[in-house]
Image (cartoon, rainbow, N blue to C red; front, side, top):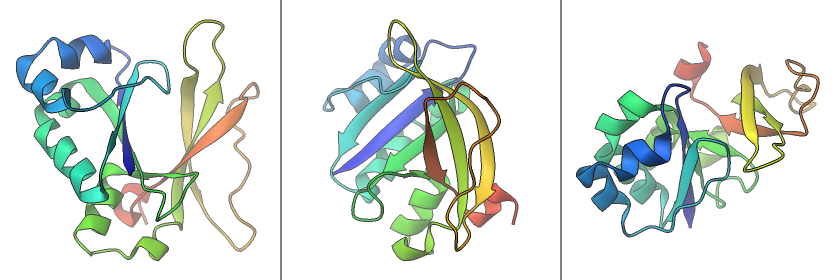
Length: 156
């Protein structure tokens, strides 16, 4: 099973924006939605292909109300996400799943007293033989979320 997580932009309330519009609501109606992060919506699909297709179906809304899209496929990596672009490249066989880990974007995670945690300040990092560097943009983070990105997104 593949998870999709849509991270809402700061100037929108993502759940409202998606579920108040008929086309988006219908596209999401077959999924159980949850909120893993503040102003985010996640759902579980059957495959990377289904996740990319869902994002393509929602593209009009993603362009307007979403800052980032994460896709998590356990057969590729259990505890990290893929960017939408990288997931699309994997689905299209342009990138092999075992070649997705070099470039990453790390988000700090801050706990909220009420509601889901918040994602803060992404940091682009490159994986080395020693692994990923420490996230150091925000001193109060409880943990990090790692999103594997394409070489193009990384600027390589």
